Image 1: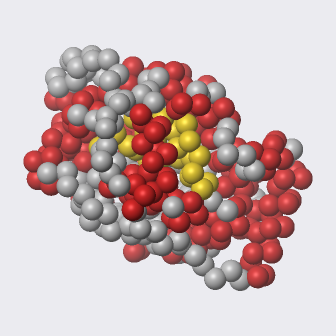
Image 2: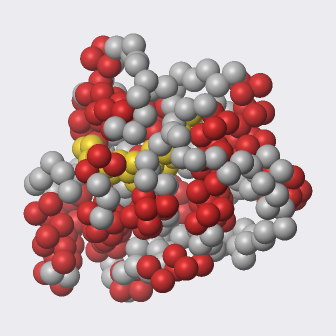
Length: 349
């Protein structure tokens, strides 16, 4: 399948301002960009128009909800492929990255279950593949786009790439896909075996963790970090507490809207505390979810998985109360969030 002549609008995304400790090396990023442009032309010769054989699994959730930990657990504990830090360097030519990773790393993975605000250190560890999703979903930044944006996405190209990536791994592949979560129902129509797993965390704990990320990641607790929901234009004029809680609530609201349009056999909600406290159960649930679309026996002893450490922060009572007030305020201002709070008491969407 020769698609070398196809070009996308987005070349590189607009990065957010980060603290010096988290800034990327601009020279190295430029080298990677040139390499990807060159390989992108060649990868078209490797793509096949093959039917969807394996499911793709997409982990979604608000920032700091446990999505990275979920990918680490499922990548280690299940027979699935995943994007590691080496493959992620080939965001415009992932088939090359997968082949190189297989030869150099033999795709043997034992997780450290550690990360710094979603970033992992070791080359074998999972990567969120942000450049790939920005590029193929035609996003030039972190701002959620409305449904009309889907007309600007080359769904045939994206679907072909995902099926070919599964073919290269010879098994299902798991992704961490913040931006794709905004278009989950469309993706499930394009590739009917697509599965979405929402990681849900206590709202106040989640918002508290976002504020901590702001301080470390951006160097300023009042600077926005990570994905911007559709309501960002409203939130940007609010205080840090309303912003942090709003980032969680509005992203969850949008993800739930998307998942309501997806068949039950294609979706799952896992609470962060259950993920850490009962990882064996979480692995079993995901194994069953994948099994709805792809049958393969597994001898993984799910029940013997050790508990994972829950990320906890000492709650400053004053800060916690401000976040609770922010939650009550947003629910009173946006009636659609009342339904969201009701859904949090349910086990399914």
